[in-house]
Length: 96
Image: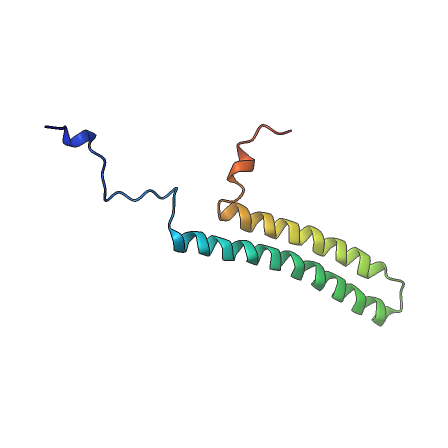
């Protein structure tokens, strides 16, 4: 007879593999990260444009707020991707 402690447990769930629905849900979250990135940039540019029109200035505010929207979008997308496990490979890499 075989030892029951050494038999594979067929009912155990391997959370590292995930299922079909879990992978689809992660895919939707990745799309959301891209949408957040684009929306942050567009919102910054639009608010900067409206400030420039209201104050009658050159496109200073549009450039500044567009750059802030870019940085904000990158941080939000990174946070979202790390939360879904997408960035786990980058954490353990030995790249400088």
